[in-house]
Amino acid sequence: MDPRLNGLSWKTSLSALLDLVLPRVCLVCGRPLLPREEHLCLGCLSDLPETRYAPLERNPMADRFNAKVQVDEYEPYAYAAALYHYRADAGYKRISQALKYHRDFGAGRWAGRLLGERLADSPLYADVDLVVPVPLHWTRHWQRGYNQAAVIAREVARTLGAAFCPRLLRRLRRTRSQTRLSGEQKSRNVARAFALRPHRRPEARHILLIDDVFTTGATLSECHRALRRAYGPATRISIATLGAVGE
Image (cartoon, rainbow, N blue to C red):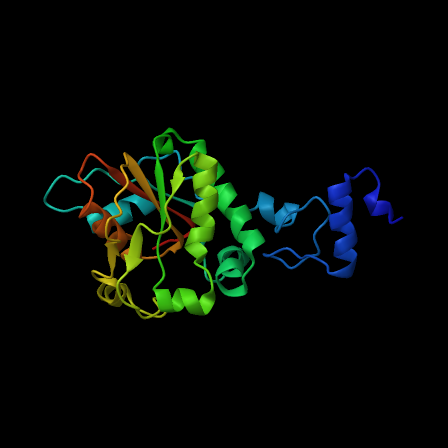
């Protein structure tokens, strides 16, 4: 028997045997994973550039988002948190990309649970009772076969003990990809692109919107506006993502 299997549980041993046939590698650095490592090697996991925004009522992400959604009428301050800082030149971007572009559902669920754990440790999110993913247009959902935000949101909802509501919001039109658009173009691209589905309005004290990455906040702010048209100010609407791009 391979000496690496000594002292391991049967589940971990089976994983190690499978690694001999189809090696798993770290999403960030590409190094082969050890039996007890999941998706990231211990070195990359320990260096994960966490935002640590979850315990903070005010943080750079929350301030940027609230600047987009605050209007003349009273608007409850939206809490905002992300698991890690997202940079185009850093390997950690592959965490969200593995799910979005490579159908790595295991990585998506793992990251979603990690995000959920950070939120669960914060009193700001203790009263979240509804978790809602940013929806895809039905044509894009049909082509891709899944919504990456829903994969993350399901795990967050499970960790928080909140209801998972993937069909509360719908995207009214197929918008252009936001990747190469400027901030102003992104806002125009998704303006009034979301609405609640007819006859769907579950009661909620605190709704948590989930997406994979926060860049300018354009998409999430439009989802926020769609929810606010249906829910009064007694309902707080906050956001959480895996990655957050700095200004």
